[in-house]
Image (tube, rainbow, N blue to C red; front, side, top):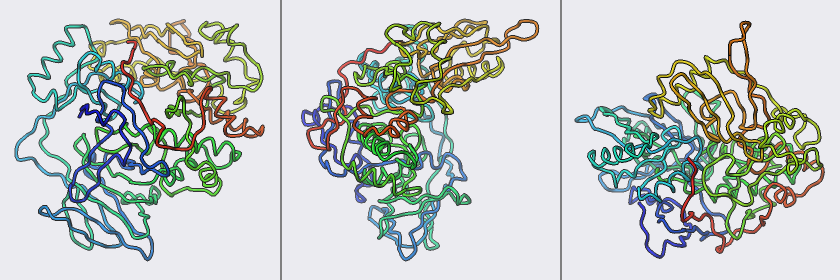
Length: 553
């Protein structure tokens, strides 16, 4: 859906989806992007609506089922189309179930997967690199993030194979043909008032604007959601349950689950500003599926109205409409649990163009380390840095420093799984002979890790290291070989600091800054230097696609 009419060059952000009950379709407006710089703005700067996939793969199991329930004294209104006409049915409780249907004849489902990534950020940067080479692409998330050759462009089996052959002739090993024959498919089924309706699109609302959702047989997982819901097909042959909710209400279900409720008010306000900024900047993540955001750690944890708290509600209200910007564009408001004493630059973790406000910052109010004099690109400096435990904002916390051991059998299994998912011929290797750090960033993060096997060397880059190996909690680590009694290599210890990517705010570090009396704007300036706080307004650019991404391979 890459079209380039002039009026889209500064596309206003209405709701991303057109949820017209009469149309029965979902239009992903933010996918209408060309190769030139595009911008997205706010048309409703007060409280834009979001479209959040709260159940992303409904129907991936034939036993999937959900109960939708109105609160006491309220009723649900369920709308769908029957024979082309809108139909509305009311009741207090509805069930969504899956009915497996055999297809009249087998169907071939096929796509060219160009690359696979741990994060959306790297997938999007790689997508821009493919576009710069003249290949139309789209970003998907069947499980991991992937870049696909655009299906409506490469719609013919012959064209797909020619593309793949051309890429392989150029030595590109990441691309492969994902092909399967489908003989049956899941179909959604709604049960209400004793009647069953088999419909692909179903809209659910309530008079009070609150709906309870729970997997049948799992009452502990039930959540309350404000706004309305829609069940709609996704790209992967099943369904997504989408919550349409204003951003300020959405934040009530994010902030307490991301930062907790016990921190100083300025810390909670900082998290509210970042969560608002992050959501509005990332409306394009699931354009391929016709919604905007997910409800887990691939976006931000969102549990609706379940778990809301007065402390975080006050923080959201105190910062209503405030977002963090850089040169009048929303920042990439990424944050992590723990940095390990130094934040990572954007390019330390992900592919893509640099963000000037996301750079390495010593996570301390003092001077426990001199990064200019002792850069963490040097292995010996990094080891000394990890051994130092005092003087940092995160000192004494669980993930500030850690050691995790992994035996060769575990490392081998993890690498084989990864290489098989990449269709790599090296997946047939038998033994890992050595791990070796090849390159570090100034923040100490491992940029390249060599895994030497009996069949050849696999080089893992940046956050893909964490995609492959379970043991390290971040890419801020060094390696210690583990030897057996006969001095044979048994495995490795990963010795490091931090939890997560380490870019931007350290939530653990912000707790200390809040205890020291720092305001939210001071905390934000510390972790995102050069940025500005602004109220949402029509002049702010939500996101601009870079004209060309320079992506290292």
